Length: 244
Image (cartoon, rainbow, N blue to C red; front, side):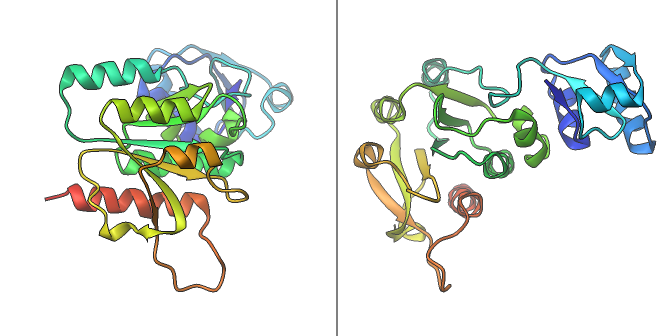
């Protein structure tokens, strides 16, 4: 597949993850800056025609960067939960922050959440390899390239993943507007936050594995926040509590 957004391409190159070649048709000033970045990082360049590039990557702005995959999976989903927990134990890390995404199927929401995860130093994002957002190009563009920096793990069963986290010393909190105010919770240590879909929320079995439910105080007339907005508020509160 091909990345076409300037931020997505730029952050992919800076991350050092495998990519290339970069296809170039008619590059403007901003695109030329990214081409220079590609050259400095020894990424192969290929000149192509405008019509040919449009057929390969319709949303391009003169350049497109090839990455592995067919676009149906989230980018960077190559980390296993087992390896993450093993490394965490080796480092004897007292604080860790994990986000579990339960049936977040909108790639725009998924990308926006990843952008929040990058800003608030989330250690790992876990999603199910079924019933999760796909369209890696949209996710990468919406996340402004954050997808290239945020560690992600796809698992076959989120309930099992939550159990594994709890066995590793994590407290698992589900996000729910009816839950206890998040500002009253001690969010230090190893924390996993579960976000459910805007339509049905957190699935029953996964909800039962949560140690508690946390909510964001609201004074509005509609019943909930967009899931990516809620993610940003919850993650900010974790970082706020952990910042001296």
